Image (tube, rainbow, N blue to C red):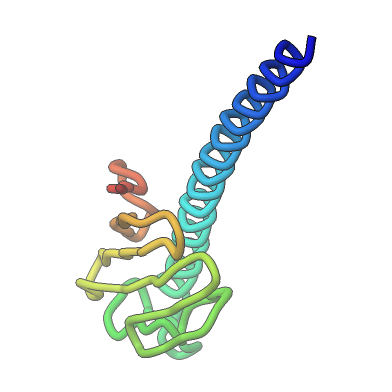
Length: 136
């Protein structure tokens, strides 16, 4: 009887250990997905703010139907602006590139998920390619 109980205790310990490892992996994956979703939402918010800048007359501090001279300080951004082309928040680091004329590009590096997300923004919003995530 003692050997059977010992065998059951060992078996239960192994099962609980495996379940714990599976739970940790699942949580980590869900956390990474949540970070990618948050970065995507931030990109959409930046693009929306950029559209507002584009449409606002230059006399009122906007672009006057162009993205020329647009800086991160001109946009509504939930985080810290590091430079005219870079902003950071808890979700990741965002960089504006190819700013000018009718389009620009937002590149984001998520804080925890790895990889990067990119979107090209035009006067009508994010282009048809959408937010493209290349991750690890």
